[in-house]
Amino acid sequence: MTASIDVSIERIFEVLMNVKDPEIDSVSIIDLGMVGEVLIEGNKVKITLLPTFLGCPALEFIKTNTVNAVKKLPEVGSVEVEFVFHPPWTSDRITEQGHVNLKKFGIAPPPRYFKEDGSWHVDCAYCGSSYVSMENIFGPTACRSIFYCKSCKNVFEAMKPVSTLM
Amino acid sequence: MSMTENSMSAEYKEAITSLLFQLADDDFLYAFRGSEWLGLAPHIEEDVASSSISQDSMGHAAMFYQLLEDLGAGKADDLAHLRSAQDRSNSILIERVNGEGYYMETPNYDWAYQVVRSYFYTQAKRVKMDSLCESSYRPIAEVAIKVKMELYYHKLHWETWFKQLMSSTDVAKKKMNDAITLVMNDFGDVFSFGNLKQKIESNNLLDSEEEMKKRWLASIGPVFDALQMEVPAIPNHPVMNGRNGEHTKDLDEALLTLSEVYKLDPVAVW
Ligand SMILES: [Zn+2]
Image (cartoon, rainbow over all chains, first blue to last red; front, side, top):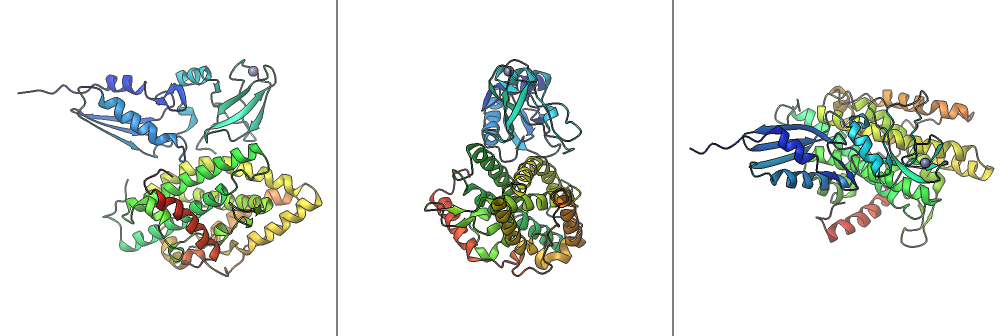
């Protein structure tokens, strides 16, 4: 009788920590809070991912990279990865570690709160100054905006806050 | 997913399918018209913003086509690209050209029209998404919650443009007012459900046409008040109703352009 070893959830999460955002290679899908559920049945693994922005071209790469990364574990028999919309991804799903890793890449993490008038503020990703102005609410990708820091005179990007209260 | 294909009545399926085509076709054409501005927007920042909005909108269309595929209506990519004009349910407003000329040769597009159409359409889409968050069809409610979050930024963007141009020079104001007239002439089918009105409304897929018109007027009310202008009226009876497959030749031309690209390489990611 050959007993197959059950796949451990810790091993899966270790692997997922190394699946990076194709555009921000310091940040993993765990950091971004994109992993919904991990279901394990014997040697079968099923993972649900929460898309950040629906039109984001990186989503398909992330899905493929997730499948390939989990497949590499010898104890895994099959992997299924699916995007789901419930719960909806919101920017407060980004972890503390995610905030640290975004800054490493020169991207300001999304603010935790909106002001009463619906506007929001971030500090400079490079020097931490609050003396910044928004240059363009739409950055090179749907999820980011462009800011200018008047203190260190750098242009930097910030992750947009996204909330169900919007 | 609570409601599966097997457990829904034929009428329910007909209603949800029709509604999904309306939403998908609207966003698909809206993204296409937006993408025609690439390189032509007033400045480079606007170019970035416009393409980002078009990309989001194409993503929304893709989600609605995917829900149709899940209902067995066909492959999402084919539904987007291979259906002829008389099978399309987008609003007339969304298919209209951006102005005179063609993208590849001497485009003479009207930015005021782009701003007004985009602002009014985005507000209309917000009203629909708000309502769909409570839809009896769970899969569409889940997508609507996501779409709504992204729309927040689109609305902010177009509202800023709208207010700025309406408070600008006399020439700008004239162009904007002309654009408002053009857009409102075509607004009659935006909130129409077409021939399936009764089935869509009675199955609690979203609020009634009348209710959503009211909410749309309320959504733009404060902006018009601040500009000391009257909120424009929505025509009661559309001259043509895109929801029933009635379309202008602008749609034929748009579909020709779109399908040429698709047929060259149908497996390419779009
Ligand atoms: Zn700085």
